[in-house]
Length: 159
Image 1 (cartoon, rainbow, N blue to C red):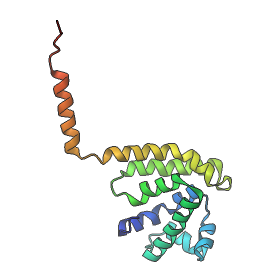
Image 2 (spheres, rainbow, N blue to C red; image 1 turned 90 degrees about the vertical axis):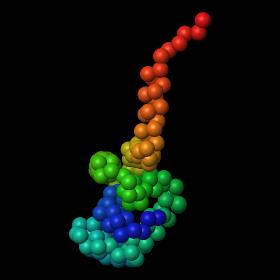
Image 3 (cartoon, helix red, strand yellow; image 1 turned 60 degrees about the horizontal axis):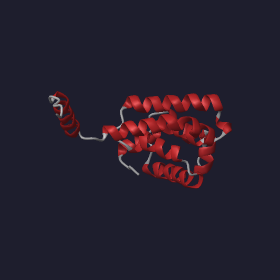
Image 4 (cartoon, one colour; image 1 turned 180 degrees about the vertical axis):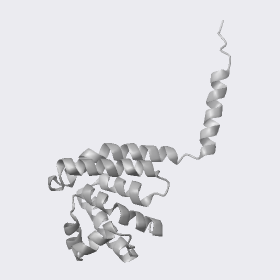
């Protein structure tokens, strides 16, 4: 789990999307944390900083949800939106948009399973693209040079 100040801010900013993946309303999250709904709404809708204690409490709840429900989609969404520093904003926005569309179409009351099922393909695509983006640029360039060399070699026919 990434506990950098940036990760704390990313969780605060993307909490509505993450709640949609889990199927929790702001009220439900507030109940689980034993805080007021206003606290959750203020975290999500203002630039108010999330404390590390709030971050840890929310992450503990999310981790419990991942483990008890075997919710790999939630785990992947957290990886993309919160834990990784090297995910492009474009990829993150595509994921947010997809989660919002699915949550609106199936509704939170349909449960997190319906949202997760419909969001899983975009999350898997994003995770796949992240893995490609982790390859060092020099390795990619070296690979391209090798392929270029192979493609420009003359073809010799065997006699």
